[in-house]
Image (cartoon, rainbow, N blue to C red; front, side, top):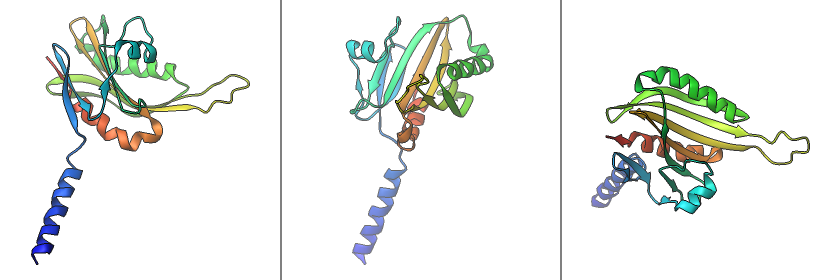
Length: 184
């Protein structure tokens, strides 16, 4: 009888841990931004960021999974919009994303509040196909969850990117990461 009770207890504890959600480590990105970074993710050094995200303005931070296939990035850039423009920005960012990829399947688009701050949130699966005449490359599909927030004259972009075939594994992690954002 004791063995049965102990086994039942272990089953209940295991079930609670299964629903506890992904393990995130609270990480300071800048003096006014913290984010929960998935367990095992490591910050990319500057040369790694430059190689993976070639752009004139490098992200504030990029964290990558151990195998390098999944990234969490935080970027900042000037904007002329204000946080009162979020309903317009949903449309603008959605159209911009549609123009960047061959195909986009939007899973969710919203203005949401996280830790007392509003964000424009777009969740989607993007596809890039090689449209050249002799194209032999398979399409590249990515699951992405992006949140945008404006503070003063700065736009902050939080992006979680994973291979689309791993969406089921990474979607709850991406959602937990975005729910962990704190901007002061």
